[in-house]
Length: 166
Image 1 (tube, helix red, strand yellow):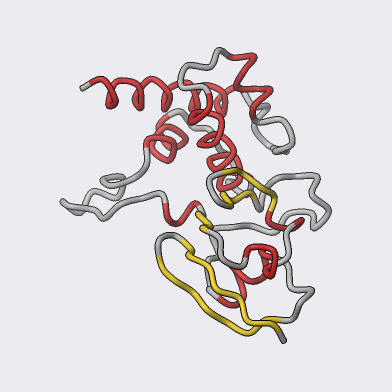
Image 2: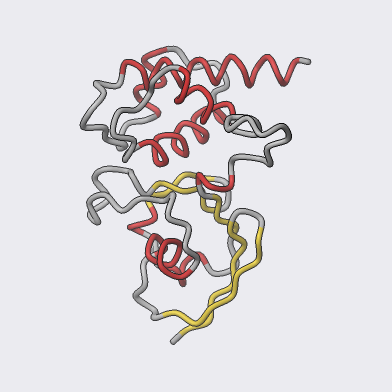
């Protein structure tokens, strides 16, 4: 067993883990962060995308021991507290946009899409449709055809830009 320490969604974590434990399994099985989905276990689908030290990674390709000393952010860490009981109050603009623009059907890919989109928007706050599609490359959706996903990312980008300018 190997001891790992990291900060996950702003909370310090410390556990003994098997050296071969994947980060996705650490998040889901040890920390019960089940918003990070396991899709393919082969790094093809992107359903397990999280941020590791500010960059999106497929957590099925990272060992928990490789994240030792790092900051890990999951889709569950995006939303802030709700102030008025409205279920969307406190949601990150990407979460709201995926909801309002119907950027999901089954929703299985959504957490990974949102985390990849967040990384994209941090690098490019005003992507066009082609740039969104390229930025989400490697995150697969088997249901939607991507039209509403792209629309959701662009809607969130506009909201984030508007919030930054006010």
